[in-house]
Length: 171
Image 1 (tube, rainbow, N blue to C red):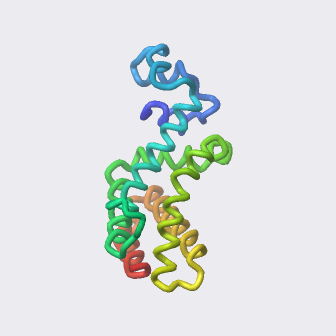
Image 2 (image 1 turned 120 degrees about the vertical axis):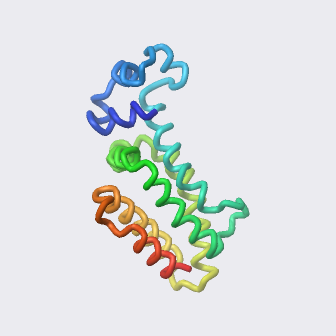
């Protein structure tokens, strides 16, 4: 999956072949088909794996209710994940935000995002926000923006300050 992600980011999804991925990964083309039935399935697995890495922190006790402490945890853990493997997440975001890729993984993307939206919207409702659905979308946009700005300039972007500001704004 790492080889595919690297090649997708470098050459584009449609220009990257299964042979290129297998060669970069040091495996045979046949072995690759043991794990993924197609390049599209491999791409979906990469996107879902990345989203799952973030989503695991939104409701750690899996009770469907987001508390202030859980939201703080979510903010902190998401950015630790990015900090621990900047190059991976640069590649991931470069592939993920291509419109043709989003169309390809739309179903899987929505299966992961809808529960998160629901949990966050309930959080904002419970905490008296006037427009909880808007607040959820706004927060997601802020999270994406912070991630992209940090990935573009990790040495100079004040990630710690951004996380503290998020925590102050929303908890």
